[in-house]
Length: 253
Length: 325
Image (cartoon, rainbow over all chains, first blue to last red; front, side):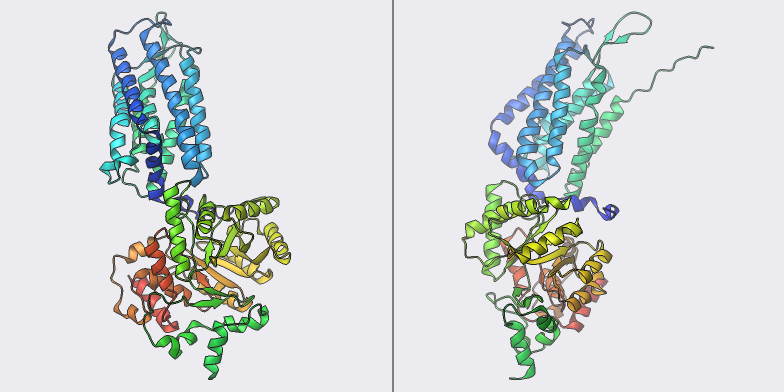
């Protein structure tokens, strides 16, 4: 079509604001009271990660607590992404949005990637420390306990609360937090420590970031007051993850 | 019987299935001449139970109420049973107010299924004028999509099928003309929206024997007054107007201003009726298809098809007033 440039973002909006938020209400009604289990599970993971971070950094052997915590967290996250793909995107969202089936495929692929990391076959993971880790923990706790409260905060009923591991936004935001908390492990010693974690670990970043843009665009077209939240969270996560390359002295130095 | 009265009676009750050529002059009869007649000039408003005014489809003379029902966004509620029941109530109120044309498209998500379920819930006696679209490429997939749409509507056939946004129209139009010739379809049309591809649309209107054209027209988007609406009159093509409220944005901005007192002269109680009366009183326009998910709104919209209609001078005043706000 030669006139694509004449379309606005709002021209692609297929549903009304009430219809969109009804999706969460219907999902919550269908799974009640399992939301509490999802929140308890997420909170348990956050507590485990925080406790593991507080330990003295151990040697990266297969049985170390950091690697074990990272694997379990990735396994639970993988289940959460697959749950959202099936129970929300395909079952509820796809009937009102043509693109939702493609979103579901993306969420499924992310779940697959997280399962591969959780399998532990591709090397060991460790936990980050410092500001990056604190931002990650903050994002995870925000996704678990603040994001569900946005519905009543912006005048919608509690029944439309978006819950981690059930709705896409808190699941994605919590995932960004966890990705900040994890990093590839190192083999200590030697002149240059060698990384041992899965080389494709960085591939777990693009889909959550892409979803932040999609969600932000959708909510912006719906004129939702919290439309900037997910893009802002993505920007914060990227800023926290960014690390300038260490300066390497040249051969003449 | 005066000449004017005879013209009015023939306008309101044309012989069914008259030929296009004989009806072209009839359809060209403007609302300004109708509204000036004592029958319509007597009252500024209309009783709540008034029948909507109708216009003839030029190609057959079949009468259609001036206001129909769109389904873009509003009927795309998915598999939500309460929301589907609410849509059925909107349809019930629409038919109770004398409405007939409901318009949808395979592009509109679950809207077709919602309409089909609503029509089934209302029983088989509703006088629906089923208007849908074909929206697929390549064109060879058109018949399968039309059949899928028909099943979702739960209808034996469509009254009108339109090529949506001119997509693959070279392939779809022959298919639709063949369906019409075989008695599996009553009317063929083509659509565009928001002022896109008007040059190509004009060429199709000149070269293809279509019954309907659907386009965007409202108090602010008036480009079609220049060429397309006069051409539709000249060629005897019925005109359906989409986006009469700019998807609600027009009413949202007008709501900040009071309705001018002189709007009462044409029986307007609110901006929605003001906007709709402006559209449907254009001599070339057959009907407008506002979409809504609320019973109160569909009732208000249907009232715009009743009572006094603005004449040409009043229409200019309406457009100028809104332009100046």
